[in-house]
Image (cartoon, rainbow, N blue to C red; front, side, top):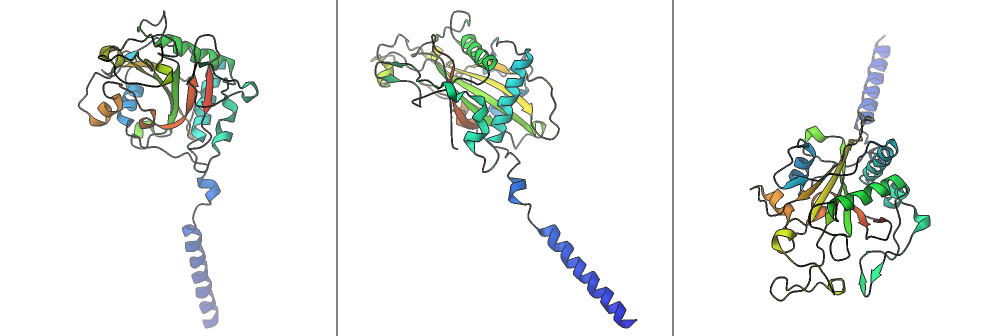
Length: 300
């Protein structure tokens, strides 16, 4: 009886050791690697305000622009594919090329137009979006910011608006946005103002030659536009429609919040840095007479 009791005690001790060992075992790398990382960005407060503000009452540094409609089911599908692919870029050790491969049609790559010695694109070859409806939608975004119908005074040209920067983020700080991925495009207009000894004495290289853009401090302060699209991408994700927003940013507006004011940029260029808002994914290009082109990053 005594020996049996000792045996049972020894068996119980062994089981306890096994239980502790199992509970202390780390999660396999393959399991943790499937979870997208949340991000903490310098421009979180700026972007959170754009996302959470009522559509009719944007932050004081933003003016809502009329963006193309998104009711088309095919466009909704394309926007969700964009958000999903962008989310995969936040998975540790993810293959950047594989994560976003389905977004563009690399079988129809082409050289983006050059203008004399001016080369606008950051890659020799660019590709159109895989989805035709997404391509038309992004074209509509460019035309909503600049051109005769936009009412902003901006133009679509190699000197003015011709590109945007694509980025993604999943905020860590705001519980209300937990599990939500935001994809954004940061458009930069008035890229190459005309060189002027008094008004704009800043040489910007070959692409500035023969510029027709006359520098104005007030106009330059409104050279940035931001498009945001958010959707839940965690276990509680739904098929609710994605409702993007498009804003023209007024960088002359000061809020008193350092992180927001720093994100707005400073004179004389007022360039908004997309890396303050999220993880850069690539660039989008358009000039009249070409297709909307994309150059996605293959690393980072």
